[in-house]
Image (cartoon, rainbow, N blue to C red; front, side):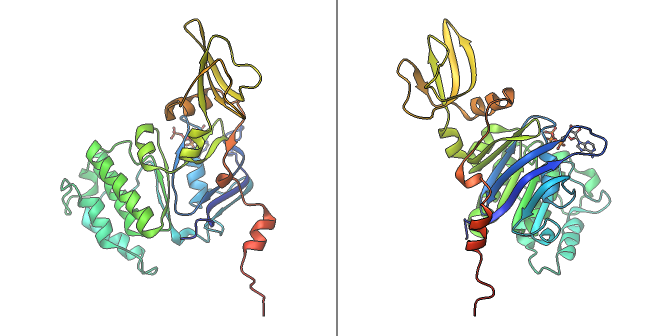
Length: 313
Ligand SMILES: Nc1ncnc2c1ncn2[C@@H]1O[C@H](COP(=O)(O)OP(=O)(O)OP(=O)(O)O)[C@@H](O)[C@H]1O
């Protein structure tokens, strides 16, 4: 697995829908290394689906550029699986028929994995292979849509809110399947979600979008470790680092900061929860964004020197 190669790389990426005057995404520059399980989070309407659809090649950016597995999204399409939030499936096909249809559509690539697809679709025994899609519950339909994506054995799996209508057991099974796919096959996974506790156990990379801008990006642990929750008698002053958010607490103040040096003296410093970090950045969109080194686009010069010498004798 080449962890240096990018699954996604964006520079100045922007998207404005024709009927939407304001940019839905603006000036987003980031990189997602291959082989990661990445959480894409943000409030309703932040632009998560828009970003996934851009990556899947279903939309064209109106500013900047996005590469997928080193190619344009259209060129990379065969190597990508996208599971949309609405989980579109043919209502009149049976579940088994849907998987046969998936196998047929992917025959050319020779990568279809029937066993992987069946494991996801029938794993909990609640779905009858002969049942028509239109008779399935929302969660069961999600399982079938995910089964098609896993069967495709794509290099990049883009999933829009997979957890939303799954029961706890199905969530656990999906988490296990995602993790083994990433570990065993090196699949890169991007999943948008509002279910923060589940993301913590599953994802090792994170992007937070709010108000159309990228606010946080990087290794999950690294992003969280860069933040500290300070509690003290007064508001944090110079020397406390970048203040993301501060609130009164009892007779004093609590502040979420990104320290830039030693911990300031008169403060109780604690590790914030994932929720505290994400919510503070969502509430305070004026706070400076933070991208770890691994989430920053590779400078052009480095890209060129890393490329094999195609013309070398
Ligand atoms: N086809 C479209 N035409 C015009 N505006 C759109 C279109 N699709 C999305 N939008 C707008 O773009 C913004 C971002 O939508 P998007 O679906 O990307 O957000 P999201 O982060 O996925 O939201 P949610 O968490 O609610 O699913 C919203 O304001 C939405 O109204």
